Image 1 (cartoon, one colour):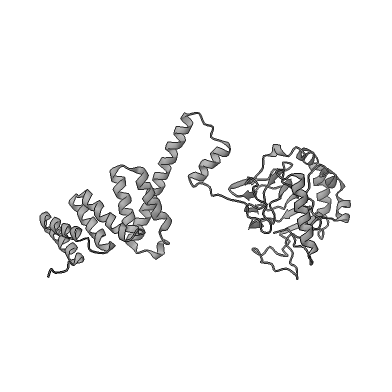
Image 2 (image 1 turned 60 degrees about the vertical axis):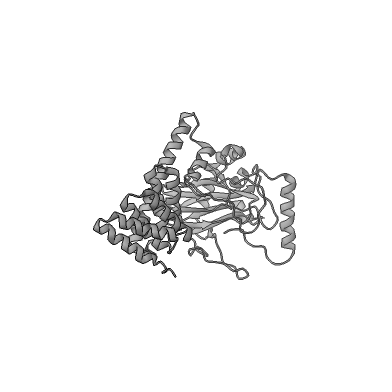
Amino acid sequence: MSTPIDPRALVQQAIEALRRGDAATARQRFQSIIDAGAGDASVWLGLALALGRLGDAPGKLTAIDRALALEPQNLRARIMKADHFTEAGDARAASAFYAAVVRNAPPPEQLPPDLRAEVARAQMMSQRYAADYEAFLREKLAGQGFAQGGRFARSLDLMFGKKRIYLQEPKHYYFPELPQIQFYDRDQFPWLDAVEAATDDIRAELIEVMKDQSAFTPYLESSPDRPYRDVHGMIDNLDWSAFYLWRNGAPQTDNIARCPKTAAALAGAPLATIEGRTPSVLFSLLRPGAAIPPHHGFVNTRLICHLPLIVPDGCTFRVGNDVRAWKEGKAWVFDDTIEHEAWNRSSETRVILLFDVWRPELSEAERAQVASMFEAIDAYGGQAEDWTM
């Protein structure tokens, strides 16, 4: 009856033989382990390290692959396999293994110090290969005369991991098969010309309103019949406040009377009209140092328009990957069901005119269907939910 092989003992014997300079004995012990196919992943990794010291690249690779067969997610084995491909000059394979290590490694504080250093090295190598790959691809495309702007350029940023994918995530209602666009092309909305042309008149009316300190109310207001999650302390907070001309589809008659030129400027806008829901038209005020946290809108059947009126330096807005600074008198249109946030990093107040319009992709029949649906929902009973945040 043969004696069972102790793979750990054989690895230790092989290492001791290497220390004595007895390569023949070391190889013999290694071959015994390989022939028996014995041992766990740590045994095979120890064997791989020793074979590497002997200069036996094929044997080292065999041992690494045996370790990965036993533990496919083993970080040490993956790093050693990546290093093997680096030495072999196979950049794509090496990059794939280094990237897998970075994706699957736990936080550094959960790793032993030696493995933490190896994972950090894997991250550095992964970044190096990614940069080389990006530079190569961009050079090839430039050589073929491809333009570097527009949607194609944004697709490259996504592929290279420079930006992440943001999609519509409406909190209440999702209308399918609508394009995922963060900021729309301004040229799609020629009716905005009239709104922008009225900027000075609208700003003048705003300034008169701002003389009344009680005119603005918190944009987010608590309600006793709705559960609210206090988003970064913004509920009932005047740091983000509003003066409404229309609110949830209802005209605020007294406020409109104070801002007739503002109301007139919106006459040609395709305001999203749903009884009891939309449009909302308001002056949105953000106090110095305030920030609006990341959030999503309620429905993707509308778009939100901003006309900047009072914008000190340091005021910026993000929709998805796109961060922009407001410019007074220059309107934009965006999809608020894509994650967005805002900052006022100045020492002055920022105010914009905000209103919602139908998405241009919806037909008149679809708009009527959506409006009828929400009117039916509201007929079910109770107060409609406020479509703010």
